[in-house]
Length: 126
Image 1 (cartoon, one colour):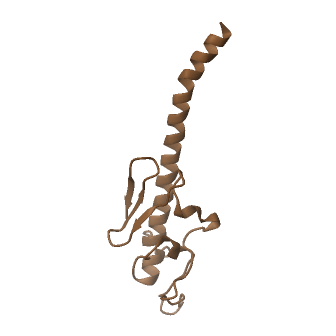
Image 2: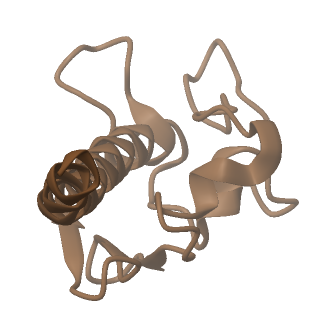
Image 3: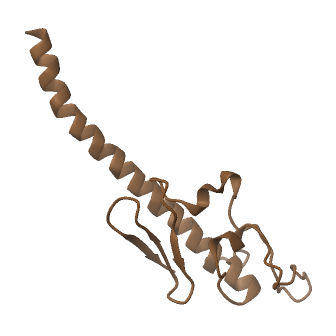
């Protein structure tokens, strides 16, 4: 009888846990995508101009948020122009992938970051 009850409980709990895990991964991915968008476009605060506010245009790749491209000058405190990064924490390169371990699709011309790891696209426009 105890084994039967445990079997029924696990049959109900496993799908619920799977849904909770998927939901938490989706939330974590959306949060990270918002941080990436803020690192690119900045925020309403004048001190948080982001890559685009400092350089004058969006980065060509997400990796440009953590290392200065050769074609961009270093930050000039007098003109307030140039690369003033890093704009995101690059530890382990985790900012390049979503919670499922799938690489983000970044498109500078359309100003979007997309995650496809969940099986359905999550897109942030900045």
